[in-house]
Amino acid sequence: MIDLRLLREDPDRVRASQRARGEDVALVDSLLSADERRRSSGVRFDELRAEQKQLGKLIPKASGDEKGELLKRAEQLKADVKAADAERDAADTETQELLLRLGNLVHPDVPVGGEEDFTTLETHGTIRDFGAEGFEPKDHLELGQRLGAIDVERGAKVSGSRFYFLTGVGALLELALVNAAMAQATAAGFTPMLTPALVRPQSMAGTGFLGQAAQDVYHLDKDDLYLVGTSEVALAAYHMDEILDADRLPLRYAGFSPCFRREAGSHGKDTRGIFRVHQFDKVEMFSYVTPEDSPEEHRRLLEWEKQWLTSLELPFRVIDVASGDLGASASRKFDCEAWIPTQGKYRELTSTSDCTEFQSRRLQIRFRDGKQVRPLATLNGTLCAVPRTIVAILENHQQADGSVRVPEVLRPYLGGREVLEPVAK
Image (cartoon, rainbow, N blue to C red; front, side, top):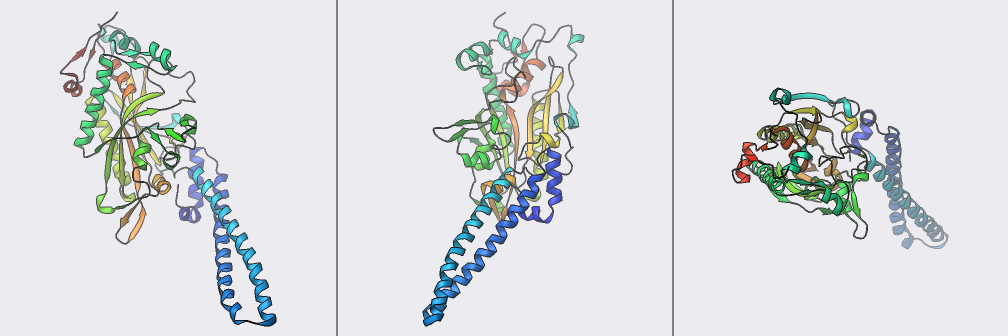
């Protein structure tokens, strides 16, 4: 959530942010009104309670008609205090509910618009000319089936559409990617973490995933637990309700977990293969920093993502995501998109978001800065979303005979294997 003081002092900035997101601008005025009622009812309650306490001192000293009048006034005050208390609670509840519906403030440098209105910041690597090499590239599913690495038919038989098995070298390739990603993160100073895949509602809501993203979340009604779509949720809630010392910052964690997404709005999109699935594994970077350091930390996370994709020898570009595609928590987001030869376009492989103080306010995570205690900033960045990375590796490093060259960074984690060979025609 955003700072209510900022809302009061500069409501036009919040309105502009909502407008850039394509969200309800009227929400800002509703929130201002509820906040005003909350504050005025709080003042009214405090005044009545003060009068009630003063009256309580006068009544024992009074007698006769005066005492009768004071007792009558005391009865009226009792009712008034109860009503003011109820009004204050109702206004506070409404304020909090409206505040939770408001997205983070969009960074002023973010391009305004929808999904296709991003700005390309950088392009890396060389896109292969398969025609010049004399063969037509196969897609990742055909390659994976020939390698004995991917089985979507049995995945669908066992669990339904958008599920899959990684088998043989496919399973080994996932383990190699996870271990190589964790090795890079650990070398950069991240603490490795294996995180819970099930979290409580306050953890999911605190990270901003029960608003516009709620349709993609799996909920276990009987237990009132949520399956995470990213270990960002558990890593953000790890320090929930804590006050951290400033000299401990930055805190950086690299979480590995299974991730679950309904993909509710993706009917008909990426139905072939394993690019868009309901369950996958991911290595996620997460940082806690001072608010002043969050823009610089955001760039650091992006550099670590670029380092990873470069080590996998993948052609990719970096985009500055447009305001309407940010998600509720992010103030700014950079995506790294790898080239997918058979699709003839770049597709998202990693993403890094600066959530500023949005999540820490919701989760009550603060830091002690001298005598002052204030919210810190949280940031997240995908290091390796496994299935999509496998898609990019298979398609970009395929050879004419259906084999796939293994990037050097992964070879130590695959027993020195340089090439993945087909096992089936």
